[in-house]
Every structure is written in C-alpha cells, then in structure tokens.
Image (cartoon, rainbow, N blue to C red; front, side, top):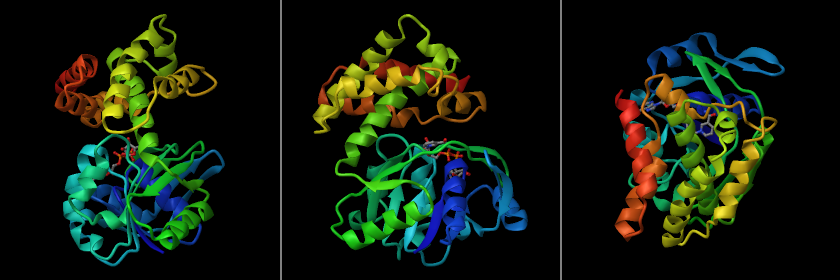
Length: 305
Ligand code: NAD
C-alpha cells in the first residue's frame, strides 16, 4: 500500500517513520516549508528510548501535493483539517482509504465534506509524540490504534490496512464501535486538557486537588447527556475510570496535556472540538451544557491573551 500522511507534525512523523521503517512507501505532506525542506535534505531525525537516527523519507508541501496513494492518513489538529483537505484534493481522488486519528469530535463530519463516505476510516490512538523542531521528533512510549471504516464493507482493504499498521508495530485493531471510543477520548480530553490548561498544571497537579474528581464529574455528566442524544452509549464511569487512573504519577501524572502546551506556545487549541463541540451539540438539542460552554469561553479568553 502506498501511503501519504497529510499533517506531518509530531504524530504524522511518528507514524511516517514507523511505517517507512517497516518497508511501506510513505510520503509526508505538510504546510511548514522549513520542516519539509529539513526532512528532504537531512532526513527525519527521530529520538527514541533506544537512541536516535535519521530516517530518509520524502516530504512534499501540501500546496504541491500530487501522486496516487492507496491510503491517506490525516494528522492535522482538528481545526486545521478542512484547510488541509482543500490543499490535498489532487491526492484524495485515488485514495481507497482516508483515515483520521486526530483528537476531538467533528472530524468525521469534516471529512465527509471532501471525500466519499465509503473511503472514510476513523479512529483513536494512544501513541504520542513531540515535534522538537524542523525535521526533528521525540518519539517515546508505546500506544495502540482502534479504527473502523465508517460504512465500507470492503473487509479486504480494512484487513490489509490493519496488517500494514501492525507490521510497523503500531498495534492496530478493528473496532466495532469506534464512535464510542472517540467520544470517550474526547470526554477525557475535555476534562484533562481543559482543566490543566486553565490551572497551568500537569495531570498529577490537577489530580492532587481535593475537588478534582468533583470538577471532572461536572464536565463529564453534561458530555454523557449529549453523547446519549447522539446514540453514543457513553457512561460517566467509563470516563471517570480513566480520569482517576491517570492521576497516579506512575501513569501519566507528570504529563502536560497538549492544550496546556498549545497555550504556552501561543497556538490555538482544539477546544472547539472538545468542550466546544459538546456545548454546540447540547444547545442544539436543548440539553443544558453551561459548564462545557463556560470552559470553552475561558480557553478562548486564554488564547486571546
Ligand atoms: P502537530 O501540530 O504537531 O502537527 C500538525 C501538522 O499539520 C503540523 O506539522 C502543521 O504544519 C500541519 N498543518 C496544519 N494545518 C495545515 C495546513 N492547512 N496545510 C498544511 N499543513 C498543515 O499536531 P500533533 O501533535 O501531531 O497532533 C495531530 C492530532 O493528533 C491532533 O488532533 C492531536 O490532538 C492528536 N494527538 C496528538 C498526540 C501527540 O502526542 N502529539 C497524541 C494523540 C493524539
């Protein structure tokens, strides 16, 4: 399978080098020229627990995207996806799979505006990565991928996709209800990303607050109501179980969620695809969502500072 990764930031580069290292023909596509030039000139520099090395793989600018690819993996932030899809229109036409593993709610709806539903795959991943600078990532820890075709019954393609990802060590499996996993992760991020960004603390710092669980539950309760209105069988326990688990410093207590990092670096956050998406959907359905609305406003206020 020939693969293009559109949005070759932290995660796109991590998937890119792992796939390329397993023998897959991978092309990285990104809009950051300095980064694209660095990858083409020196290779992608990857730091891991086992050492560091350069990986040679081609990169192209999104506005020049061309060629035929069997699989396009989108790895922009949620709010960047529509613009990326417009730029890479020439490579979307021949793709048999267009997959999003980005965080947040609404990514599938964005994809549906640009590609046929029959090629859409959606999922969630617990892999993580940091972009250190142009052509340079730090890829530590391990993860997995849960994915599902939106409507395709072409199980041969789905099977080949999973096989390719697993051959690269990406631990992928087909899910029977990926929408539930997407909502579960979005609910978790709507608690952890948002509170840690607002309180300027890491996960463990938030977890040590005596009222942390109550604060988390207030957000999650609204999300569960909204999820149910979308026929997603999310429960409070599903989300709270993961919330409680990560407060343990042996888990990811010392980790600063990406929204915290985005605010610190003066970048926009994915808030409109987390609490903001919940608030929009809830209000449209007449479900009270004052907490998620307020948290969205507070993060936007921080972005504007
Ligand atoms: P990132 O910001 O590192 O990468 C996004 C890349 O897309 C950048 O290189 C940027 O230049 C490019 N891009 C954005 N808009 C573009 C456009 N219009 N045209 C061309 N290029 C464009 O982001 P990331 O950390 O890799 O995250 C990607 C997604 O994965 C997000 O939804 C994030 O929440 C999710 N995620 C990230 C991690 C992590 O550890 N980084 C873990 C799990 C999930």
